[in-house]
Length: 392
Image (cartoon, rainbow, N blue to C red; front, side, top):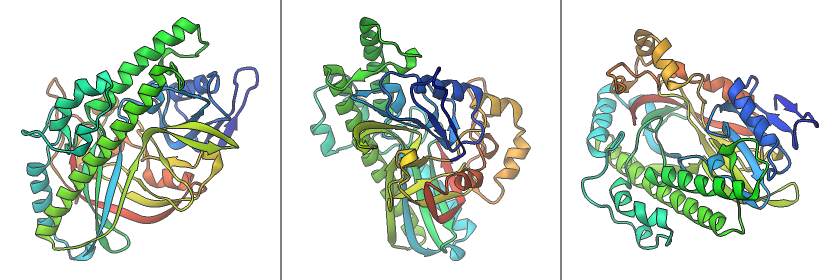
């Protein structure tokens, strides 16, 4: 842990941080959380902490009998999946990597608004809860299942320092997470205004879990988590099939984790709803995935079960600058140099046709520094070097 902040005159609970320097906006959000009436024990900031909506990304909180929709975020179920193969990393050729990544782009729908052309079948659709926002999104979700989405989501082929080829996917719940977050945030605002709740920021409006709205949110969020996990499973299975066709191999290990969710857990002698927004479960012995940027290493880790982080760790490198700032300030030639030796499809463009450098490696924190800052939370097991990447 880097530092603890507790001003009894301005905070209900302390802030414990593994992030050395927290940007002003994210620090203001952390202070708002530390003043929030339903939070329990302390606020934890992971080393990848940066500004989010209402709550910093890379933050962990515990709520007493309440849930905060924007503290889960607008992509409930966003997370990582990874497969270790038995194929030796030193035997793969660049030609094979190029072939694999090209086939991935042709096979898996990638990007904003890119869905399957036909409805996908999944037992979860038949068991969808009778909640209006879920039922409203079901038809489009049948086309979105097993698709990557956009932004910082990715599909990556990697070489592990354990000597083997690994596969990794970062994806979420598509429209489900976005629509659920916004729908129940609006409901939370109405209730907080009706009750004249003393919340420090409207983006931190909450729902007591005994209310109809609170119960509905948790049910809808958990459904989004199931959808997101099934989606990752389908994509990484498709990805492995492509890899196996080109470099015949077997699966050795598979890992799947969420890093945007809320769950009932017991901490400091109390049953609480732990919210992880851009944070990963790091309970003792649990395997996790901490990705870097598209041009830097990722890590397979094992949790140490540190109670001060609510058994959590970072979910990635964390942004060093916003997407717009990156495109405005970074030089394309520098970003190209950072991607040397990695197969990728080049930089996209924004709506104005300008080169979009928002996902360039320089837009993210140093992943090795992030890992170093949380060695009391996790034990690194395997370091993974990117060979080829497809971005959303």
